[in-house]
Length: 231
Ligand code: SAH
Figure (tube, rainbow, N blue to C red):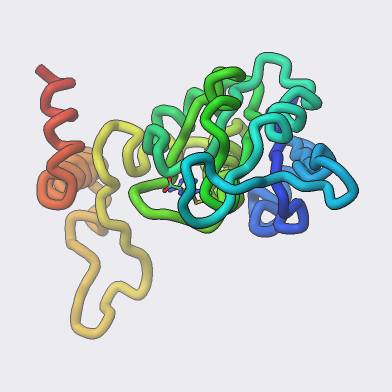
């Protein structure tokens, strides 16, 4: 079974969009993973295929109806896939969650719009809420794309070099060390000597030290977790 994503959205024309290019897009073209996009409006009510209504209790904007969202969810052959609502109130997406999703059969992703989704459908369908970060998007589509792209690039064979995911940022709980390439000298700055002397042990030691230095400096939250993990 190939890894598969089903996206429930009011804007199916946004897909595959960025998921159709580069390595992730090539992997899609050769069916190394699959993408199904479904229009929530197909489950809209009445002549106008209404999907939203005014918020109970008042306030600005519109809320996606629970019955419409539930019908869209129930029409999907979910199998054992994770059911996720992209939401700024969700658990912030981490590389650990991405890795677990990539190792599973795939995900069904519900994209909100307007002021969000009626709370009852989240409860009734035991939907997992996942956030892209502490900021507010206009809809869940870009968050769904980000999640899919992050997961698909971990599927064996999708990235050119299978070794690279193991070393990059977050995989070991640390940020990645700085990277350099040619030219050897750029505007008076040279590539660090240690990287050009061919001593692989020393290179590994330098990279580990840089990863630790950057993480301590930029992400004290990750650094604390890393230190705890070692203890
Ligand atoms: N009023 C809501 C925001 C609604 S934004 C609130 O304050 O929580 C409209 C839709 O965009 C949401 O239903 C959700 O699907 C999506 N969205 C917005 N920000 C997001 C984020 N940080 N991560 C994931 N999805 C997000």
